[in-house]
Length: 456
Image (cartoon, rainbow, N blue to C red):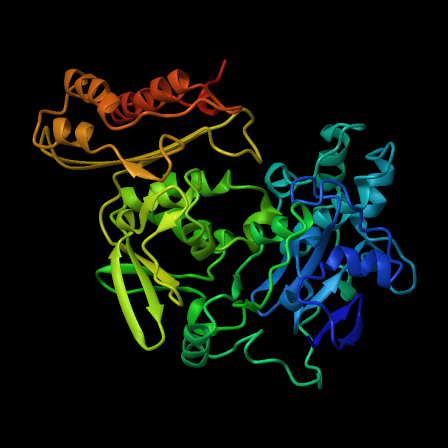
């Protein structure tokens, strides 16, 4: 493949590269830029963080699961490009020294890149910005102090850049498509192609399983598959919309969904992961589908020139099987506009960067003191994201009371037969899923239920 981008202020054009060469490997092996570290090689530790700028702005991403074709037409800065061309340290580098934010130093380059990205964007929520960067020596206190100390420093001029306009070698339109119509026709004829959205899942097929992906197509350059649009009736989220973009949109529309997304991976992962990929891979523990099912969302698919739609709950058939035809792909999801009645809960062993043991999303709409509409959707309780329909039937049309809620909790045992695994036992999953419904009752009645809301 042929790709072009800007690296640390210099334009780069590459020819005949492998579509699955990661940025991390290319930097370390081909460019001798060893500041970007290989830690986990799966997007968890942040040691490989780089700054990527495109038309949507500057963001921190994990180089270990970022394929070179995803960077076509973008600007990249590694830790070597954070200081000024004349060698002047970036403010976050200076403050890391002043506040003794490094010991062994292995994680430090990744921290510097994430801190510099947040500084560039005016992001002062350092706990969130740095949740995807792991340190086992220094601890986070001096690092957070360094980030705070750098907040008011001016943004260095070299950090403000726009994506490059390069006279690049011709691109393979089938591998990096830029037109939805053309791609749909091409994919119908080449259905064995591996489609790559954010690569936060597919990337691990290469870095951990050493899989040969065969023919690939990168979807990030198709404008019709990106962005969020609204009508009077619905919110349409295109498939290539990132979790970061969706989070921002949901903050004012469905805050509980936004809070759930905020715990999806890390900043680096959310900046790459897409809602289409989160749905299409059919994971039983994906965090997006339970919320979208509870929101009564509609899934949009396309095959060639034919489009169709379905309730998103119907897309998931059984473990590893979805209602998607050969040559068909997800184009987006539509959420009906409604007064917010959504409650989302993510249960994990640690708060940040962890996979759900149970993810529960509840929509309960009241007509006076009667439950008029209800949708209970769970991940981690079956081989697919699934509604608790027996429990719903007990709730619908009944009085809004704790007695009704507890009756529905009992009925939930008819909806699910969860498995025991390393994340949770079957008994624990059932009890916590039931308690999520009870938590809605307490929250609706003004009681504090989150440990993050408890004050001494």
